[in-house]
Length: 363
Image (cartoon, rainbow, N blue to C red; front, side):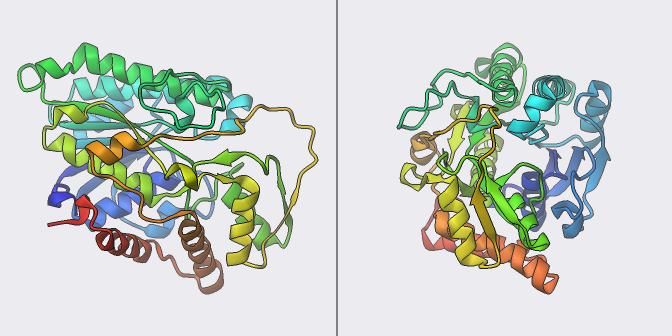
């Protein structure tokens, strides 16, 4: 996969104890990468990272601590860095706006500054969010050249992280100077809402549904009509890995912002996603909430991923129904049989991608 580029590569993941980070650490480990991570302790019990028991080199620390982050980068001397560490919950950002801004903005600055002190780094992928765009709730997908925005603190922090990334790329890792004064390429990645096994975060739809099943309770759906670009966690990860391959190969045209999401017709409403989960796990129960909570959350959000399709050859593998089926199957295996099927699901995803003859699966 990915031209065998990750075999024996020193790879650093910030946020490797989180949901997406732990899946990425597993996939990289399967490909023979030398994986290390910088993160806070896993945010829930149980958690996917501990269940995987990968044995990766871990530095437990806060990315807001610039000195500790710089020391970790210098010690690991990575070839590539995937920056996933973040405060990632929209509703929590209303409760802790300062922590959200400091983590997502200054944490990104600290990481980019650490890269400046470590000449081993050849590629950096800054993972932000589809919520970085100025959301006008229009019916077509946002493109990478559309304006940044952010109504809530989380969305604003991700927009700022994108601006910071572009600033450091232009100011300190300018593409015109690549191969002369530096050998580092930096890109950013914006993904839609991800689902998959091993997520127990608070205030997320799938984890809330799963917790309710285990407690034999109902889930209150706050915004059942809200539409999101849902995708299985392996979808954006395949995009990040493909983008990382291009950067490690020195393809300067790839050092920019990228969207990774489902096809536009795959946008699904919250209520419909819950109904799909219920068909896969009939024990699940939910109801429409009548809460008077007035916290603003976007009602419609779409991504235009044509740039990734045309220039990277990246395409989604699993549609929404398959993503939900795989997610429900993961949790049922865990709660009903005590099994962690993440490695098997990666293999199934890769085989389905090979069946579609996607470029990153070809020899």
